[in-house]
Image (cartoon, rainbow over the protein chains, first blue to last red):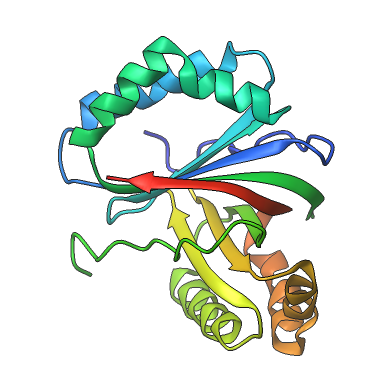
Length: 113
Length: 113
């Protein structure tokens, strides 16, 4: 893996869209399976209507944050209900000691430099 | 550093509060200075009115996400305007190749297991 991969920002969509903030504490181990499943979920989300982008960071202690951005709450509901995503949510129970999801409406944006 | 620090979730505050989503791509190096400055910002935020919690994950490639949670947009404005935080924002230019901030209103929450 390269030391400095390209920046992993989501596009700066106009305010009024929604963020699905997924935080989780992983159990140790199973990295290859987990990484493959996570990559598949990104691929799947990218094909869903209303998908705007995503950002993810996984800390060394197993705590990670993934944020996906969507045009509407309805788009998030469809994503949550997708059959393959539902199966991954069930499988996630083996990976996560705990998780939280917050759905939030993006109201202001700034960036730099 | 321990392999598995305790989970780093923010408390699940009632919907209607605000999330300040800070994403950034760091330049390599300067880790000790950066970690000290980041820890000081957390300490400072925790003393601000309206602060509810924060979550942070730093990926191996220098891309990181920190989310702080606040009772109101006004609380975020006060935090942004704090003199020591302002100085850190200026200093941040030496650490960050790029950054984005999204202010979002939290509307729904779920968690498990």
